[in-house]
Amino acid sequence: MGRIYECPNGCGRKYKNRRSIWTHLKYECRRDKQTCPNRCGKTYMHKGSLKFHLRYECGKEPQFQCYVCEKKFTQRGSLKSHLGVVHKIIST
Ligand SMILES: [Zn+2]
Ligand SMILES: [Zn+2]
Ligand SMILES: [Zn+2]
Image 1 (cartoon, protein in one colour):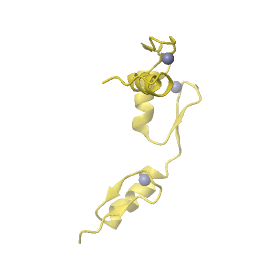
Image 2 (image 1 turned 60 degrees about the vertical axis):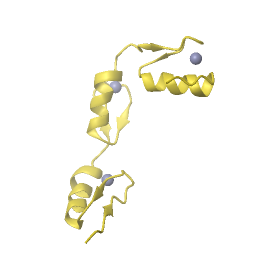
Image 3 (image 1 turned 90 degrees about the horizontal axis):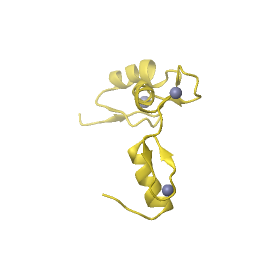
Image 4 (image 1 turned 30 degrees about the horizontal axis):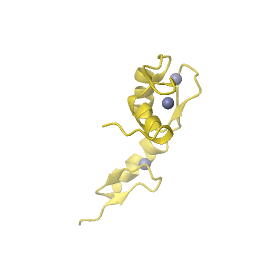
């Protein structure tokens, strides 16, 4: 009771019993990498990430542009961290 089983592959999943983690390891975690069907070369560990990539990144024009150096990004988060790391601008 109270014991939590964490995925040994470091994927961050936690389960309350051994059977669940077995199922996870067998059917989810050890799956082959999800490769982008558009052949852009991206691979993902989880289907959800690939879905996200296909929906928001793959083949999409970068929508977020740095107003300092004009570099473009596909994700708002990437631009944000770019501003912080490269230009030392922390936006909220
Ligand atoms: Zn896992
Ligand atoms: Zn892609
Ligand atoms: Zn910039």
